[in-house]
Length: 355
Image 1 (cartoon, rainbow, N blue to C red):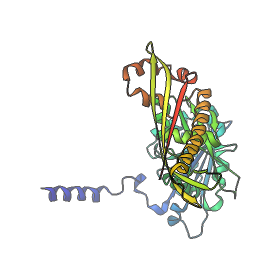
Image 2: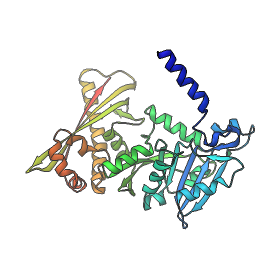
Image 3: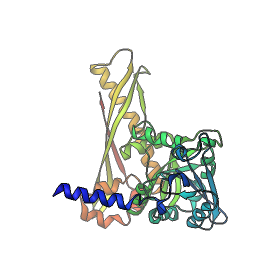
Image 4: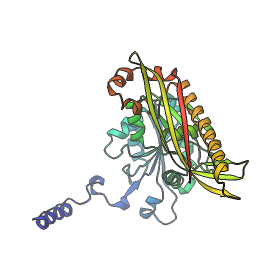
């Protein structure tokens, strides 16, 4: 019975062919875009699309990456206009890297996310970055003839390995905006054509507009709150000992008074591994080192919480996580949570485990 069913399924697949490609076009007749950049423009939006090494198999050897641009009143109109700029059919189904310019983020990213959610070729699985101090078009151009997708791919892989900023998909950001009312997005800076893209903190979206950035220690603190620390080395013992952060988890709890949230408690557990030392610390020396590193992480968490409270953005979902323990009370406080969060006392405890 199972063999017969498998045979029927195989026959159906052979008959239907490659339904994922539009009109069953040959790969050689298509321009496969990998990266898309979206900026604000006078006409509406400025869209930039670029192929990368993935498309080299359907181009002649050594041909530079194809870059298409269009400024139109809407993202849909811009994508349609880009179709007329290429001899090949422009296929958007491979776009998995989305860059949003700072100017557009200041106006609102919801139209872009809506388009990605509704378009039959695009989707919300694309990795999302915010370009600081420049346009997404300039960021795409920074890849030159080789395309920018390799650099973005490296940043994504580094993030998965815990040695770069937390990567986020368009879907994750969209879900946070709908559920939490705010979201954090990894930010990049562009040095222009020929210069590599570099990480630079996180942009904070409230509603769907850019409210501010977290840099340096604030950004490190946000990563601890979100449970995804990037490559981070803590130095202690008067500079004689270095430890790499390997994991972090922050639990949150809410206190209520007269059914209103009155305080937020955070408990962050951080695991580090000693990677450099002249003599491995033991006993009391190890305890002093642990307390020193707890102080460092506490300072980062405090900086991040202070900044997020000043923005009124609980983009790490601390309230929602704490509310799971008291769902009835949380539902009553949820609607006004940003206001509660912005003026609520926060108690932070840090526990460092040294391996």
